[in-house]
Length: 67
Image (cartoon, rainbow, N blue to C red):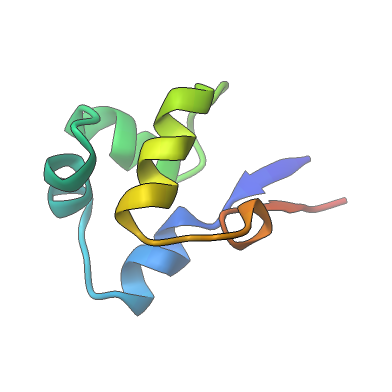
């Protein structure tokens, strides 16, 4: 199963879903669901916006595989 590490990244950077929403232009409920891994699908556009906003270079910093 693929899992987003967005919650961990936000915590490490002292950000909340509202702030990430403002930084990326992604709706707050979408960011919240992504952070809680409740989203069933992630759009490439949203993943890219998050990577740019959080200055992430490698997708593995954002997504991990969990058996």
